[in-house]
Length: 275
Image 1 (cartoon, helix red, strand yellow):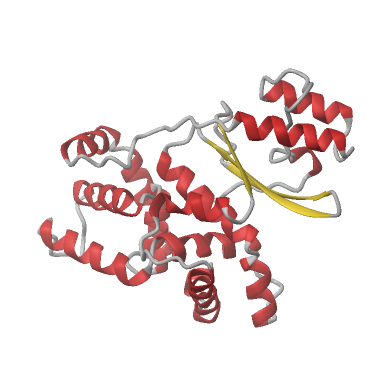
Image 2 (cartoon, helix red, strand yellow):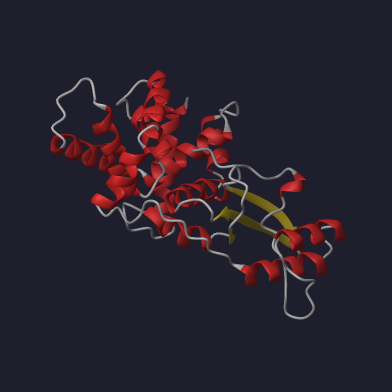
């Protein structure tokens, strides 16, 4: 686990700090602003897919005389999950894994672990996370060391809404920042998942507007244009082009229509975001 390796964590934090400066990211808490940041770095396709296992993917493909980066985000997921996926894929676009491996000469490190920790450092900044957690525990009257399940659910739900991130990322952050042991993760996850009714009540009771929302956004025009461009340049086979058009329910492009390229998983260059 990367979370206990200070050298690796410091390298990722330095990377995040540098990228914040380079891209004029002023807000300490990014939340769903991550979508705008990602859109400045690559072509982003938002589309609802019924396959619950697909969260998003990042693809690099030759286009014309150069290469282009594409990110797909499944908009059937709730907004806080889409936010995490966007941050995760941004880590791939910015190649945080290559940066850390080269900087530390640690090519044994797992790229997905590095990218997930990047997403955590970007969306869940350590000092603010500590402060918000501390304030909530005081408000809930927590005395420790044992935490009642309803307090845990209230705490996780509050932090989910505050940072606009999924519950798995919040609980993983507890481990990364030494609030709970690694072997307690499954207990926390099952405890939270078993309190869905309380979670739903908390969203309504506290007006947690960032949670429980599914924005089925669909950038069809960009998809059409991208597919047409891929076809014209002979980058994908006719069979793959037809499959993409069927997937996105598009008719064969005639004039100013184009197509997808963001969703090219058949070439094995995609990855699923880890929560």
